[in-house]
Length: 463
Image 1 (cartoon, rainbow, N blue to C red):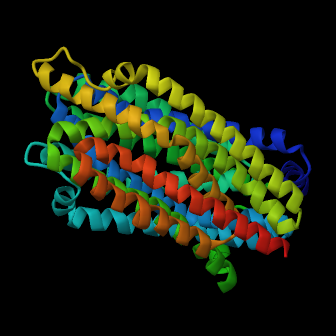
Image 2 (cartoon, rainbow, N blue to C red):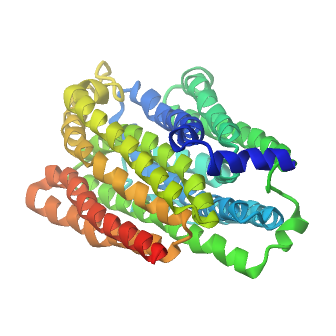
């Protein structure tokens, strides 16, 4: 066990930064992209029906699915980043207690979320923008994926964070990717073979939930096995050993991280409500774009998640020079990805959006209108990719350093001060085009604030 922990500490503390970042980030990027594809597969195959109302329903439920991510961050990133900092201080027994506490915390929060959504499902869907034409589809999907499937989904994501922050990036990525790959095969099977026509949304939901369950089972096995080599545990006795200061450290980072995703979710709710006020086709077009634009975002989040344990370890061990080099290397890589994505989407927006909705069905005219909206929205919103990277990158840096207050402040300012108000203002001035522009303006203003916060945090630590 000691030699394995030593190798992880060598990776975090001594291996040249570009190689260490590649080692941690590449598996994470792969799993992010595969899981993104797995989330997009539902939309892709639903799009084969040519039914814009089914597509709009997936846009409504995307917000509820994203809450799984937010809740997994509470204990996954909150606990995982603290485990990495404890490793930097050579406190591996305390790390075991924190990881066990985080494991059972993730189980409890998942069960609570499932229960609450089950009780208030239809009112929630109406709030999220479901219309009379889309609510039956949205209800079917949310019942299976959220009410029944939140436990394996949230627990899988939390386990992935804990494994990654202990240095097991490849195991975490393999487990999360497994579910994504499986879903690519199960989706068409349930949608077009097993279930009768008209039940494609239900088929997609069943396939997604089965895939999440398989992924969760593997990650439970990997986590238990890694516990013999690293400060990871699912022993209830270890969870009870977590000191009050350690539990506080988990929530100090975990709550802002969860709220960050939750506020992002709130922003998506506002997008859906504003878009649906125009018409269901604007909502469907925006829903397509909100999936497509996640491709560069997923790669950049993978870079940031790979960066987090290295920054956390070196922050805790006092190696500020290595910490700064890791931060700068990750930022440069993310900006390069963002620039490439802008060029690609500007050139191929119609072709990309057309992949998500067939124009060969009986409802071809509405499908063509939806694609026209989606192409316009994509060309506008993709311009936000570099500033979104700055916002993600800064947030993960501050989480790695245990700066919960700064992370929370950035999250509130980003969504509630800049982005959401810009949605309503620009939509009022320029209709749906203004709604698309709001992402660029809001994220741009938030990125300036993010850079100021990160600079101030680093300067304060050096003083």
